[in-house]
Picture 1: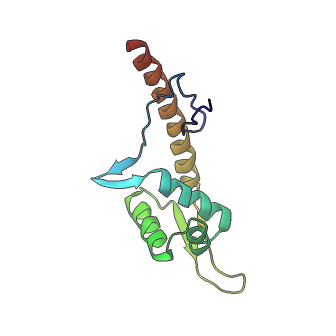
Picture 2: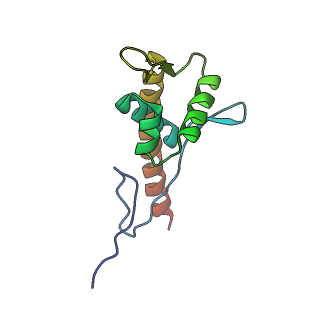
Picture 3: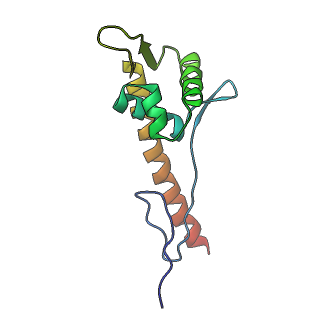
Length: 129
C-alpha cells in the first residue's frame, strides 16, 4: 500500500499520524499589514534583482501591486526600507536600505521561532490524543 505524502512547512517534521499545526505570521501597524511572508519575499527579490519591476515579474505580480506594497511598507516604517534612484548614465535602480536588510533578517528569524513554536505545540497536542 502506498503511503500518502503530506505537505508540511519546510523544516517541520509531521507527526506519525501526519498531523501538525500550521500558521502564518505577519506584523500589523495601526490595523494594516506592515510585513508578512509575501512582502518579505518581495523585499528579497528587490535585493536580488535591483528593480521593483523585475522583482514583481519574478513573483508573477503586477508592477502596480508591487509598487503599492513597497509604498505601504515605506510609509509604515520609521525609515524607508526600500529606496529607488532615477535613471541616468548608470541607469536607475532599487535597493534595500540597511533598515530594510535588518527587517528582512529579523522577520526570517521570527518565522523560524514561530515554526519551532508550532512544532512544539504539535507535539503537545498529539500527546493529548
